[in-house]
Image 1: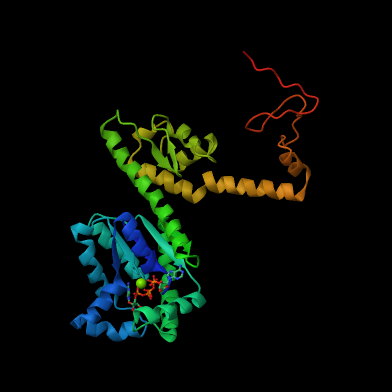
Image 2: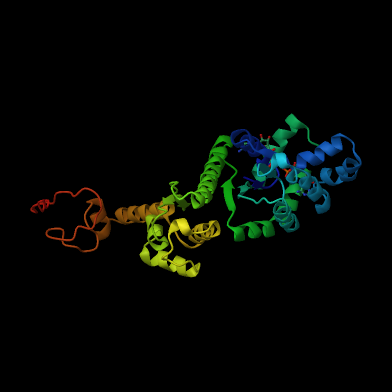
Amino acid sequence: MNIVIFGPPGAGKGTQSNLIVQKFKLHQLSTGELLRQEIKNNTELGKEIKEIINAGSLVSDIIVGNLIEKHISNPIFKNRLIFDGYPRNLIQAKNLNHLLKKYDQKIDIVLKLSVSLEIIKKRILERKTLEKRADDNQEIAIKRYQTYETNIKPVIDFYKQTNLLRVINGETTISEISNEISGLIEGIKGWLWEIRQYKYAGKQKTHKFMARIAGINIPQNKIVSIALTYIHGIGLHSSKKICKALEIPSSKRVNELSEEQVLKIREFIDANHKVEGDLRREVSVNIKRLVDLACYKGSRHKKKLPVRGQRTQCNARTRKGKAIAIAGKKLTPLKK
Ligand code: AP5
Ligand code: MG
């Protein structure tokens, strides 16, 4: 798994990368750290970039590109990298894709930490006393923030297109952010594992495998249009539409799908459908609003009775779950 983490200076990229490295046994590749190391060792490159870094500007794309290629090409780090602070502009984002492709790898998730300038200033001044970084003072911190803001918009758009981007509120506590990131990575890890199982299942038909889409294990032996209805929020109509849009024959079975097709379905659902947790949350918020309004529908929800005008006295029980007794109505005896 390769992860990209970016955000303004002081957003917590380094802090969170450290925690991810420990938890998921990855390797942190901080371009800032690599460049500072060059300065510390007083190398030719170090001398060349010292002024640039201390002024809060970006080092040339070629220099940083060469530095990261050394790591990407190293088989020890293959699919185990967390890119802290790379890419910082569109050229770097495209270069990263190019290099990963060259070494038969890819990005699995992109994490953006969002933090306001006010908090950044505070954090950087606090860190100055601890780490004594030459670029850690209020004026240069603002300059670094502005450099980030100027360059990052196209990078965000670039990763939005690939559906890899996850935005995280970087203003909560370190452990809260870490938990959120771990949850996201666990999700991906689980999913990657499923994909590997899927490949395996393709070779050995006896192996039990469930393709995972929208966090749900859909059954492998059912046809796609039926299997997708196991996802809360996808009915038969939607599942047929999904198959049509992706040109996947809806009569194909899940275990006959290629890895790309599973990926395509997952991305299509992410982009176009509200499902599972998100849908459940939306529904419960809507119900709560009706209850708060105390309108007819709200009062029916409150009493756990059917909402859409069905006659509760004699027929149509549409609510799921255990039936509740209604005054004056005998419950229909269960059929034997
Ligand atoms: P780099 O070293 O990457 O600096 P940066 O981007 O400015 O980011 P920082 O390292 O300052 O912040 P961070 O997000 O890692 O936050 P941290 O975890 O330390 O780059 C330095 C320079 O190198 C650049 O300016 C540029 O010149 C050059 N460079 C690097 N990459 C380049 C590239 N790709 N292309 C061109 N040039 C490049 O946290 C900050 C502080 O806040 C810490 O004290 C931490 O304890 C605290 N903190 C963190 N999270 C929290 C929290 N949730 N609550 C409270 N405190 C927190
Ligand atoms: Mg850092």
